[in-house]
Structure formats: C-alpha cells, structure tokens
Image (cartoon, rainbow, N blue to C red; front, side):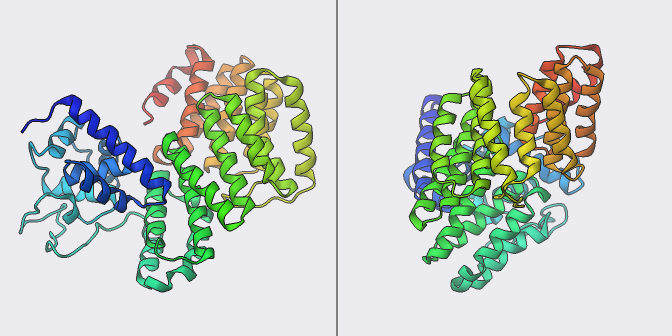
Length: 431
C-alpha cells in the first residue's frame, strides 16, 4: 500500500515527538528506536534514522565518509535511493548495509534487511551469521574500546564511568564530533541500569558532552535536549558546576540562533550556580559578551568585560572540555569586540591562537576570528591568508560547524573582494 507524502511527513513529526519525549527521560538511541517501531508503521531502516533525528542527507554524507575512511571512492548514494530503501521499494546491497550499520553504530542484522548467506560482504569482509553481531572494524579503536570495556564490565561498569568521562573530555578534540558523539551516546546507554548517584552524575556530564557535540554539528534541537537533561541532573545530584555549565552552554546555543535576549536570560540562571571566580568568568564570557555586543549595549559590555577580567585574574586555568582557560577567554573577548573595535578583537584573537596548539579546533576558531577582524579593518589579503591557513591545517571532517559558520561569515565580510575568490570556493564545499 502506497503511503502519501503528507502521511510520511506526519510520521516524521510523530517520530520527532517520540524522540524528544524519550530523550527528556534520558533514553538512549536504541530505546528510542524501540519506541518508534512500537508506535509507528515505519521500517527498521527508517526508524534508526528517525531515532537519531538525522535527515537523509546527513546519513548519505555519513556513508560517504565511511567509504572514504576505508580508502574507497565515494559511492553514488543519493537521498532518493535511501528513501526507496526505507520505504521497502528496493533493497540496499551488502556494501551499503555494512556502511549504514557503521553509521548507526549497530550490527547489520538490526537494519531489518535480509543479509545474503554467502558472498564477500563489505569489500572482502565475510558476511556474519545472522545471529552474530559483528561491527565493521572501527576507525578509531582507542575510542570504541572505551564503551566496549564498559559493556564487558556489566553490572560493575559504574566504577569505570568516571574514567570513561575523563577520556572523552581529555580527547574531545582528537576525534570528529559525530564519531565522538556516537561513542559517548553508546557509553551512556550502557550505564543506564546503574542507579548510583555517582554514575547518575557522570551520565549527566555525558549528556552535557552530547549537547556540546550537537552544537558543534549544527543540531540545535539535540543540543537543547541534551543540555536541558544535564542541567536537571546537576540539580538532582547537587552538582552546581554541571548545572551552571549546561545552562551556560544552552545560552550559547540560543545566541547561535540569534536570540540575544533569551541568551542573556539563560546567562542569569547559569550565573546563579557559578560558585567560583573561574565559573563566573566563564559564564560572563560565554553568555553575556556576544549578546550585549549584538544588541549594542556597549556600556554593559564594557562593565562585564572588566568584571570577567577581574574574575579571570583571580583564577587558575582549568584544562579540559568542562574547564575554562585563558585561551578560551581571549577568544570570547575577540568575538565580543568584532563589531565595535576590530583592532582590539584582532589582538585578543592572536593571543588566543598563541595559547592553542596549531591545527587544534581552538586554534582554528581563534584564527578565523582573527581573519574576520582583519577583514573588518579592510586588510583583505591578510584575512584570506588566515582563512586559508585554517583550511590547510585542519581536516574538513574535524572542522566544527561553529568554525564553518565563522568561515562563512568571513567570506561575507570580504564582500566579494577579488583576493577572496579561492577561499569562498573552498568554504562553499564544507558540509
């Protein structure tokens, strides 16, 4: 029976509602998938995509990355082909099945499509028996091994939760954001049955990490859900740092959606839980400076910069994804001053970049802001050179979408200047 386009759209909306409801209760992707398949007449192949909240284009791009990471030419997969597979009009071959299983982080036997009983499988890899649950060889074995170890420990895994979180935060910049997000979500789901307060707190921080990763992969809806969960867990377990951090991150996501007044309201909530000078400096830099700059309240901006400097000077840098340091502080100062004092913005951006490892995501962010400051001062050739250096130094799959946005803003700042043609072409190819 053919289903109308309107019905398909309604099913997608209902799946989105189920996903949001399940995530509010801390459900992992497999649980969301189970609920979608129970409630909606959709195929397993479509249910996995809906459980992640991904578009078909996102899945196609992810499959292309799987091929490239395996040293293969990009496949000819299109969103129309994926649509036909999901609706049962045609079946994907074994190579595509293994790629899709890799993207969704599941065994190919869970995709709802029969596997051939013989044949070479994924470019020579033997096809597993339907009852076996083999994954494709991981691209980042040191990353996937963390959740695998949690799974092996079973009921005693709670003791390793803190160490798993430490690994994810310490190595945050070493993996493409989507890859890391998949593994953090897998690890968190394996900890769901552990009820200790310590494990619950760790899962809250993992939710915060997933919110940050969603922000870095242009998924604001997912970011709000994960960060909202983290803030609630922080209040439940009495961890003001988690609550403050999650609310502050929500403020930044809100500002990225061009809602400065709402961002400032969230900043006030986050500041209420900021219990140390370093946390206060962090919340001010994260949540107040750019909104105040955007609405043109220079007096308040200057006042908060002075207060944040005072708090920062009273503190010691705290490294890590959930910490705050001078490099990040200088980056936020640079972005705050872009509109009002680009020369000062350039100075802060230079300072930030000098404190980061060349080629790291933080370095890329600072260099791109520096380039924008140069463009604002009509130094187009210098701005282009800085932008090109970012694209030369950082692999495209490791560039965060926040840096994508900065690079696109840089192209806009250049206003079609002749020297920026090559940069504009390269930026246009970023996904």
